[in-house]
Length: 349
Ligand SMILES: [Zn+2]
Ligand SMILES: [Zn+2]
Image 1 (cartoon, rainbow, N blue to C red):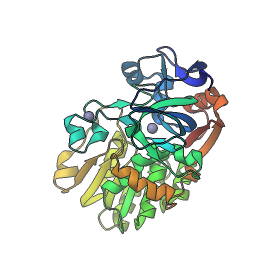
Image 2 (cartoon, protein in one colour; image 1 turned 90 degrees about the horizontal axis):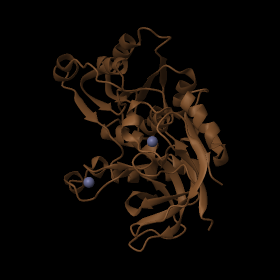
Image 3 (cartoon, rainbow, N blue to C red; image 1 turned 45 degrees about the horizontal axis):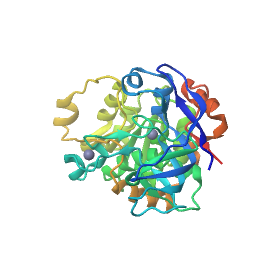
Image 4 (cartoon, rainbow, N blue to C red; image 1 turned 135 degrees about the vertical axis):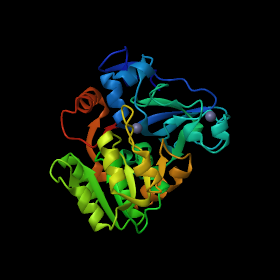
C-alpha cells in the first residue's frame, strides 16, 4: 500500500478547499481503515467550503472534510470485534463516546461528547479513512456505491419520517433539497396517503415528485396554497416534516398542520425564529419533535430495509457523479451553487 493518498482538505481558515496528497491515516486499536469507494457532498460541506461563521467557529484546519461515504475495510485494529477485511460499510458521521448519560440512555446520536466525522476529525474526502468500529454499518456488496454513500443523509430523512406515524396520513414535506426528496420516497414507501411537497426550486421539486410527492407546490407560483391544503384536508395535514427550517417554512408548516397533528423539525434555522406557541402548539394540541442525526442504530436497521431491501430508489436524487480526481470541480460547483444539483457523489474507483 502506498504511503500517500489524495484528499480534499481545508488547509487554512477561510473560503475554498485544496486537493492534495497527505499520509494515509494510521488506525488506532478500535478503528478500521477503509478504502473509500464513494463519498457524497452535504450542505455542511458547503458551509465548510464557504467558511461561514459556523465553520469558522467550529473547524480547526488542517482537516480532511467530508462525512458521507461507503468503503471497503482494508485493515482492522486489534480491538475490532465484528468487522472483517473486505466488508463494505457506510459510515455514521456522529461518533459517540459510549459512556455519557445520553449514550447510556440509548441516545448515542446526541451524545454529550459527540464528535462529527469530517468536522471535528479527519473525514472521508480521501482515498482512505480511519473510522471507529461503532460508526461502521455493513451494507450489501452489490449495492451501488453511490447509493451506499448516501446512507447518512438518507438516514436523516428516515429518522424524520419514522418519528411520526405517516402511514395512511396526509402529510406535508417542506423543503426541496436532498433530505426532502428522500423523505418523499420514504413516506411513500411506508404508506402515506398523500404527500404535499412545498418548495421553491423547480429542478428540485421535480426530483421530489419523481421520489413520490403527489402535489408539488412552488411557493413562487401558487400564492394561496395554505387555504387550498386546509380545504382539501378538512382542517390541515396530519403531519408536517420540516426539512427547510426557516421563519417562512415554520409559519407555513404550523398553519397547515391540523389540530393534534405532529410537526417534525429537521431543518436548522440559521438564526432564532419566532413561533406563536399559543396558536401553533398549545391551542392546536400539536406534538413537536426535534430530529438530530439518526437513531443509533434503530434508524440504520430501518434504512437497510428501505435501501438494501429496495423499498426506496434514491437514484433520482443523485444528480451528479464526479470521479474523485475532479474533487475541486465538484466542491466549487456545490459551494458556489453554480448549477442546479440535488445529491452530488464523488466516486473513487
Ligand atoms: Zn451530511
Ligand atoms: Zn456519549
